[in-house]
Image (cartoon, rainbow, N blue to C red; front, side, top):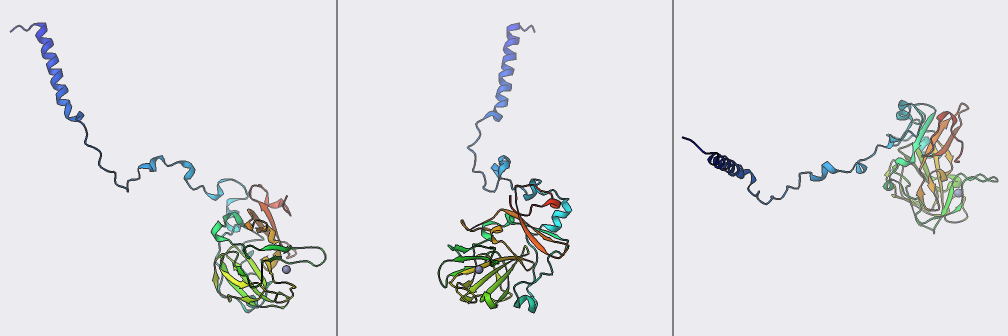
Length: 277
Ligand SMILES: [Zn+2]
């Protein structure tokens, strides 16, 4: 049978049309999408990188061997609840855990989160700063009104709570980074040695016990028993935490110094600045 070229074309197009029809099931309109189960993390794939938590040690601020950083940087360490009678009865005592790894310890205040510190006398104003030439002042005096609530500055364990000569009723708290805070002249102490406190826990009421001429809080910060300037810890005007590293050093003659270094300032440990620039 002879098939004309026209017929060929007809068959060809018909076959093409049929194959197109055969393909139709794949092209038929898809049903309306059912709701996507909530547990499928649809957006996860597009999660912006900026929201990924950045490790604290991203920037090389400290020029130290990594191993040294691990051993001397102490954001949170186990501390004892079983204080010796010396620790329960005296303010300036050495801490057996301090300088256990070497002669330098670094406290990074930037690791303390906003919920983990509290200004010790909320609303208080400084009436006498640390230091001075004539009679050295071992703390910062803060005032509000008589019998106002004094709170723990950081999480920790109460080491001492008793009357202590010129300090009057005093509380000493040991914190997990090795710091100690002292709260003095209280009309009443509200906690006892061994009590665990959180930042903001009420610990005493303001008074003028001991050597004090007005009701106020005498607030000290100490490391291994040695007091240092509370301005290194708090900005008293705004009642906020400083963003410092505290470089705690034990020197050859046994003396201890605490120096603040601003986090953004890179430094070599061998030539630490003695004071803030
Ligand atoms: Zn004072």
